[in-house]
Image (cartoon, rainbow, N blue to C red; front, side):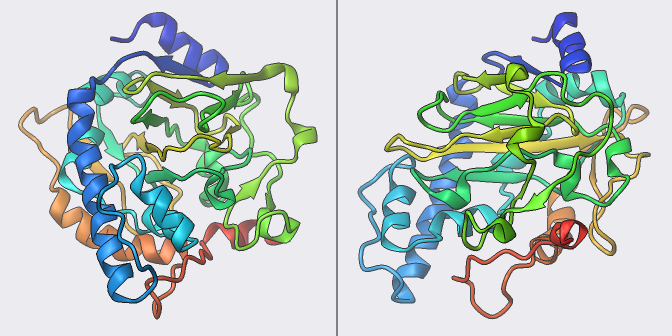
Length: 311
């Protein structure tokens, strides 16, 4: 499943790809949850008069793209709401992932509160993530905690539909590079993204991560990475799920939820209480992302991380 070469590559280069870790049979229940989330959104948007066509005839890889064309911001709303449903929780805490991240965080493992469903619709600027380091979105000092992320695509990904790129070895030395606010740069209206300037990215070290569905890209918290724009006709569904040792500082913003413990080395019968945890994290995610409290169709994001870099 994972070799010593994978472990060494992650340590030395800041990333590694484990091919075909999950089958489509294992991913399908999560895709069904995405389908349900989009269906519920379409019903609400239709009732609110935001759309006139619910596009019920389209599958999970086409429907949100059609909704985005009819009402811009639809894909952002799916992404920012962050609905953690049972099958995605099951995937996140799967032994396959925990057995792998154990190599970097130890036998006791928590899931970090910052996780994402990525609903990358075609040619949608606000769903195209620029160069950044994950730790830049947390509090200053969070980079000292080992926090590997598992990025999992639900269809084959390539340059055309928005695969990931990483900077090989970019996590060394261990420091957070200077980030700027994309919305202040003016290139993407209403962007909530941070970005590292292209001049600070060594082109010769950029690796394009074309992958099969069910393969997993593991990322060091300090390796610069980005996703390319989606020029296909399909929604590029993916998730990024993060882990750490429960004893380490999460770096999450003040007053927000703690990580969820997923594995205890001294208690083989332990199972995480997802319902109790997510009841707390749902509201905290809204605070972290700075979502509107008045309009559920407002796709503006004013996240806590923006203050750190608003210079």
